[in-house]
Length: 74
Image (cartoon, rainbow, N blue to C red):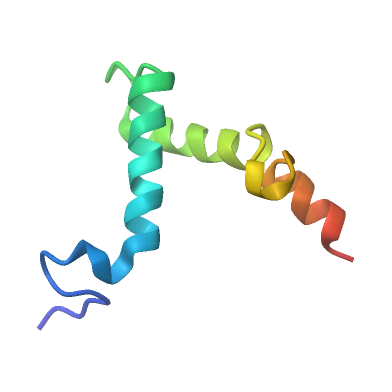
């Protein structure tokens, strides 16, 4: 028995995660020009750091997630 939070073949069960995965794939391959010379997990780790610390987000008033968290956590 394999436990899962979604049904097989039903990506709509976890649409938020599917959306994030799509953004990561699009930006890694289109913007960062991943070539396959480095392991994928290193590329993803680097992208996550970039996303959280360097990439401003419109929904956060053009702050990075890190800046937003620091500004509003008190």
